[in-house]
Length: 408
View 1: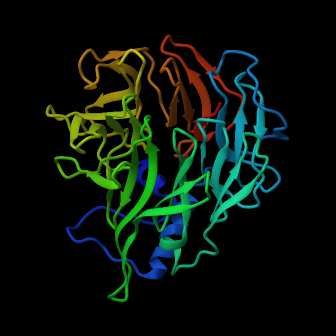
View 2: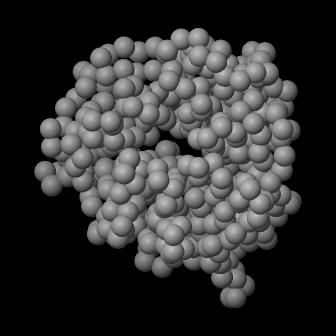
View 3: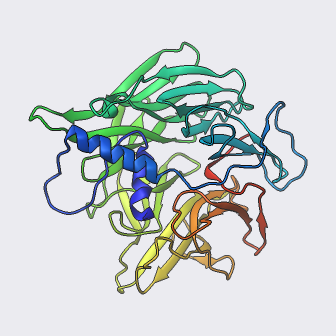
C-alpha cells in the first residue's frame, strides 16, 4: 500500500522502514536486512509498458508549443534492457526521448537547475550526463552489494544544489560531491550497531531537497522502526531534526517555501504515517500540524503536493472524509488557501481526483501534472495528465511516468 511506500520511497538506498507497533525498536539480522531491501526495491518497480521505439536525444530541447513551461524528465521501462531508464518529454507534450541506456535500472535521478545535466544512480553507481545523456561518467562507485554491506555501501538519492556546483547524495550517510574539484565530503555517518551480533539501525541519512537559496538541505532520517526528516545547515554544518509535537513522523511529500523559511509536508494516506498537512520552521525546526490526520470532529484530513504559488497562496490537493478509505488511493480535490492550509480554502474545480500516484505542480502553480495509477494495485507512477484549475485535462504522450521532474 502507498501508506507504507511513501516513506520507503524516500529511502531507496536502504531498508529502514518496518511495521509500526511496540515501544522497543526491532533489531535486524543481516539476512533480514537483505530480504527487506529486496522486497522494497521490488515493490518500488512499477509495472510499466516500455515506449514503442523511443528516440534517443541528439539535440538540446526546443519549445514547439506552450503546453509545458519546461521539458519533463521521468522514469519508464526503456529499450533495449527493459529496465527503468530516464526519459524526457519535450515542451510540446508529445515528443519523447530516451536519455539513459544503462544495463541496470535507474533508481533515482535529479536535474541540474543551471544547465539541465542529469545525475542518477544505477548499478550502485552515481553517474553524470548532459541533458541528452551524452558525456556519461561515473562519479561514485559503491561496488557490489551484499547482505553485510548494503546499509554502508549503497549509493543513492542524488540531489543537485541550486547553483549546480554540488550534488548531495547518500553513501553510508550524507555526502556532498563538488563538481569543481571532484572532492567528496561526508558530513553525517549512518549510525549502525552490530555489537550484539545483530544489526540495529539507529539512524540512516539521505538528502531530499535543497532550500531555494541553497543554504539548507532537507534530509531524511530513517530508524529501524520509523523515521523523520531534518534540516542540515550548510553554513555551520549542523542538523536539526523535525519532530512533530505529537511525536509522529514529519513526512512525506514536501516543498520548500520560496523564501527558504520553511517546509511543507503532506500525506494523502494514513497508517504507519499519519495523513494531513504539516509545516516546519526552517530556523528552529519547530513543526506545526496545520491539518491533523484525525480532525477534532472525528473526520479525517488528507493532503498531498503542497506548493506556495507566486501569489503567496498555498496550492495543494485535499479531502476531508468521515472514514478512512479502504483503497490505497485517497480521492482528492485541487484547492488553494492561505499559508495555514485552512483560511480561505477554496476548491478550484468540482471534480474529484481518483487513483493519484504522483503530482508535479508547474513552477508557478498554474497547473499540475497528475500521474494516475493504470490499475488499482499500482502505487508508484502512472499515466500523466495536465490538470488545470479551470477544469481542463490534457493527456501527455507517455504511457507511464515515475519520479517526474522539471528540466530546462
